[in-house]
Length: 82
Image (cartoon, rainbow, N blue to C red):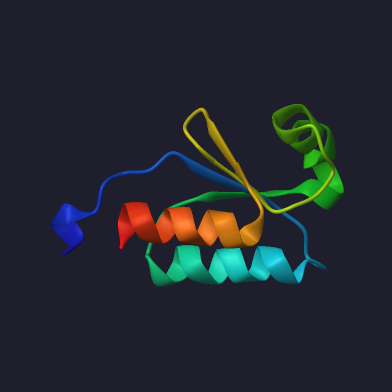
C-alpha cells in the first residue's frame, strides 16, 4: 500500500481552537497523507483571506487548488486518496 501512495503538495490552514480543523487533521492522518500545517491564528490569516476571500478555516490547498469547509475537504480527500 505504501508504494501506491502518491506524494502530495497539501497545505492545511488551521487554528488550535477550531474543531473543524481537528476533523480535517484527523482525516489527513487517517489517510497517512503528508501535509504542511499553517497556523492561521499566528501567521496565515492574510493568506487565508487571499486564497478564499474569507476568514473562515480550515482551508486546504492541494497544489493550486483551494478547498474550503471541513465536510467538503474531507469528502474530497476520501474521493482522491481512499
